[in-house]
Amino acid sequence: MESFGQFVFFCVFIVTILSQNAVRCATLDDTAKLHTDLFASYSNKRLPVLNHTDTLNVNISVYLLNIITLDAVTGVFELNFAVVMEWTDYRLAWNSSSYGGLTSYHLRPSYVWHPKLFLLTTADDLDTISGNDFIVNLQSTGQMMWITGKLMKSSCKVDMTNFPTDTQTCTFIITPWGFTPLEVYLSHSINTVDLRFLSPDGEWDIISTSVEQNTFYEPVISSVEIDVTLRRKSTYYMVSLVLPIIMIVLLSAATFLIPVSSSSRTSYTISMFLSFALYMSLISESIPEVSEPMAGISYFLMISLIASSLLLLTTIFTVRFNMVESLDEIPKWILVLMRRLKTCCFKSKKLNKVDKVTAIEDIEDKYDSESLNREPDTEELTLPEVKTFMDMFLFVLSNVIGLIIFIFYFGVYIKS
Image (cartoon, rainbow, N blue to C red; front, top):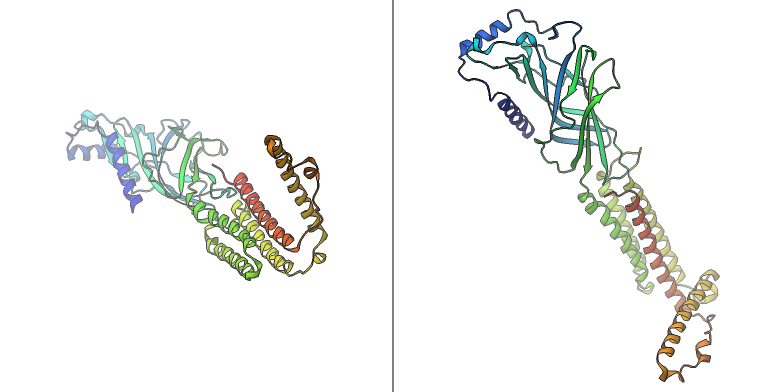
């Protein structure tokens, strides 16, 4: 209902502007006489050209009123368009002084020849984008203007790779069906779609439009191509889809900070995994159900779910690992890794001590060169140290993997 009201306002606005110079002293008798004289021998089935070899030029201007929806699954773009058509019918010109100064006349399109435009890219029944409910404005020079409008459903190739920061370009091709370019040539007056009457949309922003001649179908028919490029408003999807997943994955890594002895580590990990699975089921309706190409956020969710599953398996491993009672039961690669890390840490501390000895001369006797160069027995590892090391190592590793997933997703699939 709101769209219809906008269209009525648009029509009244245009007609008022074009009719503002009309002389208002004509009477009803003048109007009736004009109508009788104009249509006494007029045929609305003939092209308004003087010679059969002449070409009738129909000029159009396109106005976008509002966006209805863009369905990513079906690839259907719905929006309300208004099309202003202008052409000249030499048979309907008159001398305004003979009719009380009447310079313009409004009538139904069924009285005159008028172009019937079709949407070639329609996703609905192939039908005209005009109707007899829209009034034609006729000038005394024979110049005619017809403002039509319709809810258009056009096929649109949707690329959801960068959802929810995706940009889509949809094309509308309009043609006067049944006429060759030598008979009726469809042209455009401006190279963009007029957006002055556009109602703001909650999901899409229009970033560019273009109107140009389409030569693909020539010389069969003349057509005009209308391109509309939209950018999705991504704030809602980033807040409700992406950020909660990031929080769940990072919080899941905190399971390794929970002492195994408290018996809460496994239950915490299972709770986080179930939260992730439940959240995915809740947001599934918000994710586009397309496979070619599949949305990048689908890969992001799949990889995050795999990481959460591996985290659950790793938690079970740490519980089993903390049940060992001697170092002999621990895999050798873990002990080797710990010894190397311990050696690196010791060397770092040793270099710090050397700097302090150089800077503070009054403690040289306390830290002699022999004590500084003495290596610790890195072979001596205790079981509690190994268990603590394993927990911290897995905690850091989980966060690093999570950050890599997030950086990759934002770097590849999220566009500013």
